[in-house]
Each structure stands twice: as C-alpha cells, then as structure tokens.
Length: 140
Image (tube, rainbow, N blue to C red; front, top):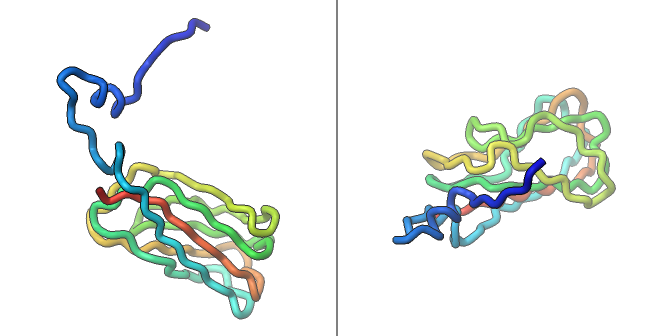
C-alpha cells in the first residue's frame, strides 16, 4: 500500500490562501462539559429513564463517558441527546470507576435545547450504583 499525505477538511480551509473560515465549534472553540451523577437508591427497573442534563441550541456534541461505582451486570443503557442516540444499548462491566467513552454521532449540532437522557434495558440496575455521565461539547 502506498503512503500519502492528506489534510482534514477543517485544516484544508485553515491552510488555504486566502484562509477560509472554519467553524469555531470545530476549530479553536472552547470545549465545555455537561456532567451529572445519579445514585440508584434501589434496583432500577429496566426501561427506566434518567435525565442527566441538557445541551443548549447550536451545541456540537463531540464525545462523552459513563463511569459507574459498580458493574451494572446484564443491565444495558443507551444515551440520547434529544432524539439522537449517542450510545447504543450497551453494558457497563468495566472496572469500577473506569470510564467508558462514547462518540456515536459525534459532530451532531442541536437545533434546539435538548435533554440528555439515559434509558436502561434488559435487566434492573443494581441498587446503590453511582452512575456518572459527562458530555463534551462546544457552542462557539
């Protein structure tokens, strides 16, 4: 396979003469974090929805992570920003406090203020589990 040299879309615009405008949310913008935590006081039934935050209009989603204080066993969760799925149903059996990163649909821009929800499925989540969610995004 031959080697090659290429530029990404934004770098091509930045490196052009004259320099083309680059979307500030994608180049030089300030990264922001929406973070929240939730403690299951008892086993949470499958199908439960936890609202963990909200992103403002015109926010660009880049990535996020989930950390739990204990394995969620066979329980699965998905995360949505508005109606856009950013985590498909998955289990969280990582070591305690080991972040599980996600970035499905990275680059999606919200068209209105959008709730961030985590919905469980398949099995109940264990009681006393602390679930932490962080979303990385830009708005400028």
